[in-house]
Image (cartoon, rainbow, N blue to C red; front, side):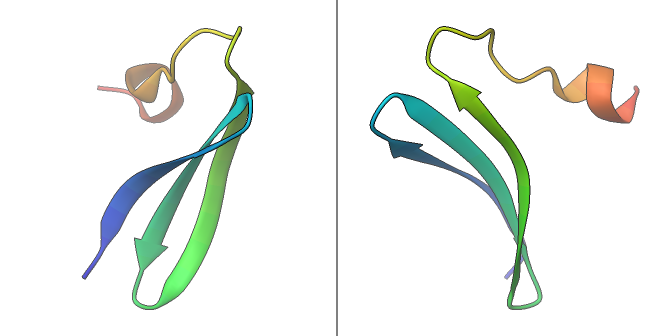
Length: 44
């Protein structure tokens, strides 16, 4: 099952995708940074 997921680790938020049994790390953000901008990364 393909999925876009978040994982919280201490003060960090990790965004990753699980596609066909492979994990792709997409971003690591500190809690003080702005939220993820999906449209800015992949367009509309």
